[in-house]
Image (cartoon, rainbow, N blue to C red; front, top):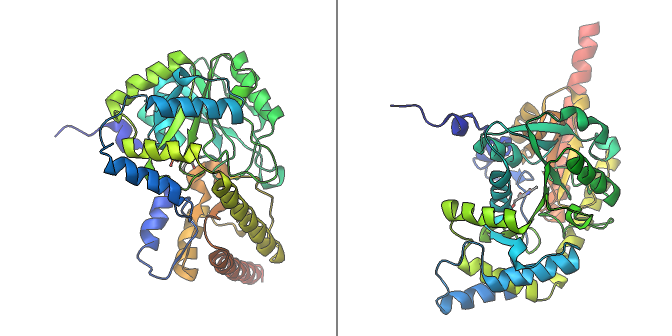
Length: 396
Ligand code: PLP
């Protein structure tokens, strides 16, 4: 038999999945590794989907999505994100992932390079690999620097093959939010080097102290593709619906790609998405406030334990520094799971600069977070005392 696709087999397995597979075998394990809202989808959105099904709205839609939904999205991004748009700029996608993959596939050729954040969302590299392109990581500062892009490092990473840069704010895994000045500098960098800028704004509404800014609102000349999602904003991860805002030419290219891959986003989910946009938004604010309270709780718990901390300004993730324990993040996460029955994401899965951290998700109740962070602190204490006694015995 001929070998299976090298690109598919070379794609690394997610480190989060490895921990999850182990954790499901431990019945009373606490799960802080998974990144999805613990809230149910608001009932008016569920009801809209129910009605769509009852009315037989169960067929394919146009590849680009329902015209009415695209129009509603164009109004939303113009008004809320400051991105001037009409329906021809909008492609409804199968979640943010579908939008990010179609964006990557629309601009990348085999052998191209795409700049991705380190630490950053692992799917960016996977998507580049599926396009036979290469992800080149650009560094974010460390915990003390609030995980911001090190802008001075960017020009040195550009080669004649560099085609695009991916920017993610609010960020998974750091929770950091990029200020307007940084986004303007990234857009200017993309313009100077003639790169596409793919902006992942799937967490745009989970934002705490700083405003969310879209690079496409800062003087885009048609090179920005912005991916949004209903998944996190409305607790709709399973509905698989999102959208991309791009120039009409790029949007048309993505629509063509959708025909080849998914045809369209689910018709029922698109009806639900319409209801989400048209309906009350207090559910969005309430969820964001809950994530903010949980973030504050985690900061307090870590501080009271003397662990270094920072203030994520969005999303529902927290990187915790384990660098001083001298153990790489994957064995740390495995031992934490077996020793304390706590599942966390190893930072290495987000890139080499992530290896001194583990990521916890704050998309869990305050009670679960208290217990989970308590177990983590106990584990770190034991590890520190073992390290101290080992180094003491070695030195004597
Ligand atoms: N972008 C980031 C940074 C994410 O963390 C995720 C999901 O976890 C997505 C995009 C895509 O999510 P979805 O496809 O559910 O919209």
